[in-house]
Length: 216
Image (cartoon, rainbow, N blue to C red; front, side, top):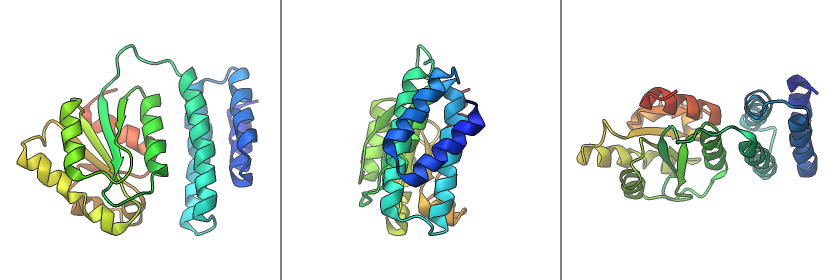
C-alpha cells in the first residue's frame, strides 16, 4: 500500500459511508509503516477536501456529510495516537462555535488537526458566548481563539470577540481566527468581523495559527 492507493480507498469509503472499512484502511496503512503524519496530510485531508467540494456543489446532503465527518474524525483520532508528540505543547488555542450555532463537525475536525500538530486545544463546544471565548483564552493563557460558524447571522456576531479583545487590551496577546461556510463563501467576510485571519479547512487552520503566533 502507498499513500495514493490509500487516499483513493479512503475517499471511496467516505462516499460509501462505510465506517468499518474506513477504520480498516487506516489500520492497514499504519501496518504498512506509512507515517501517521503523512496519512493525515496526503490521505485524510485531501479526501475530506474532495468531500467538502462536493458538498459545496450540492452533491452531498448534510446527513451524508455528517457520517463522512464521523469517519474522518475516527481516522484522525486513531492517527493521533501514532503521531510523535512534542514533550511540551507548541501553544494553546481555544476553539468553539459561535453563539446560537449548533453545527460542530468542522470545529471537531479542526480541533483534532490542531492536536495532531502538537497544540493544546481547549474545546468549548457549541454555541459559545463571545466573552466566554476570551475569558477562557485568558484563563488558559491561549495564544489564539478559533471560532467557527455555519450560519451567516451567527458568524456576524463574532465581531464581538474583537470588541472584547480590544476593550481588554489583549489584541497583541491573543489572535482571533474564524472559519466555516460563510467565510468560505465570501473570502472577505472575515474582515467584516475584524478577525486576524480566516481558515478554509482544518489544515489551513493549523498553518494560519502557526503563522500568526510564530511557532513551527
